[in-house]
Length: 631
Image (cartoon, rainbow, N blue to C red; front, top):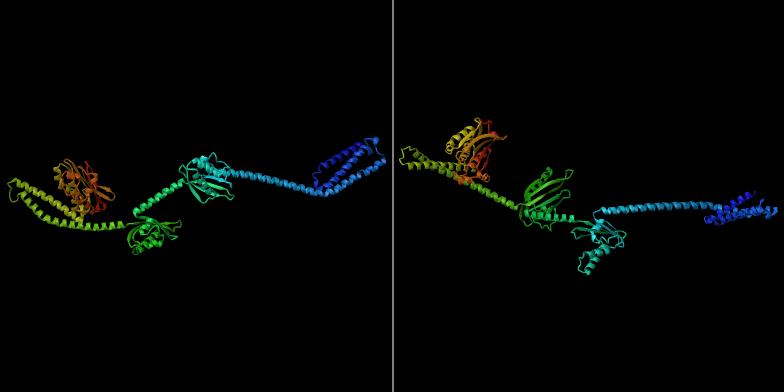
């Protein structure tokens, strides 16, 4: 029994000890908790007394109380403690709900604080990531970047800024003021004459930095040009960005020089460019166009009416009609017309334009040029007048030569006839050989002079447009044979081989007399300019789908390449012909060329000095009835 009471005491003692330790936690229900604790203490004390002196079984029997007193004590001793416990419980239990609510609130508060701590940590990490990303972004940009706080201290910058201001790189770090940086920079540059100039520059730069307006350009020692942009932040800081615009300024300078050269070229050439915006009905043109129209480019307001007012009234409808046609047909155009300057002066202009359409096919712009061609027009008029006078003079000269040739041929024929009678001794022999020699010279000279007069007469007829062809069917074989027969004796005198290779059935439509004249002229020239023992060959062959050609080829002295063009002009002879004293007037080739062209053909020359000359008489294919092969 004593053991049970001891165990009860220990349980009560432990409970009492627990309630004492928890007194701070339940401070808000202090009175009820104290009564409960006091009651537990009293009950524990009675349980201790029961163990020692009161209980039915005591630990010290010698001091055990009488039975009646012990039974009264069992009731009276535990009653205060029980009453204290009951009152404490009555007062404590209503506060348990409040305590539970407080515990729950504290737990929620703890969770809220933990959530806030987590959010703060997350925000810190995001801020760190954003800061890292910001610095990485600053490093990737090509501009030099730096930012100052509201106290004008460095907050951040990129490596490009450090490279740009390498002279203060050792001092460039967060916390350094802008003024400290520019003072160190200015002193290290050493470009100021004295302290006053240095201080003036620093104060001016501080004023620009603290009150930024727009942008400014800075030229560095390397010659590079940077555009500085300084902007105030909402918090009062300053952001400075420097952009390298060296290439931009170089291109702008090149463009400016190019534009100046263009303006100069347009001024020299009296040509300007223009454009017309169809949708907005707006004209634009260069300064030279204004000058062409008689305006001052510096004061003129460019409008459509400013242009139309200068177009000559008699040319307006023609100009507008052509522009409408170009727009409808999507074609470029060119037109010459007159403009009337404000002072009444008339200028001739040439307008070249093109139509520019948008993606829907609608006309969007007209663009083009206007050129002052007044001088050209005047030159053309003078040339036209000179041409008319030259043509009239040529016709008068040709008419004179034709008349004179007729007048000369009549007595010349008599001289040739009498010389021939004397030479042949028709009325009796000439006993003096000298007279016979003289008569032979008179006959040959007269015949040569008659040949020259005939050439001049033929050429003058061609120049006077008297060139009717008497066309018949010609056997070129017979014509060539006749030419060979006529000139063979002359060739034999120089031991020149004169041969031909012409199809016998080659028939051509043309003027037989003139064709013979061409072949005689060309073959005679070949014999004259071929040394003794040379070769002259006439042949024919097809030279293309539309042409058939006759050739006169020799291995004579040839013609210099520089003289090939001029030798076809009237009265022009080659240097070889002059130096070798070969007879001639220089009309044979020009006359032959004109006759061939009358037949719709061409006379072509190829030659090499010392190797010979080849003359091609190229006729249209439709003049031939067939194309027989050479035998």
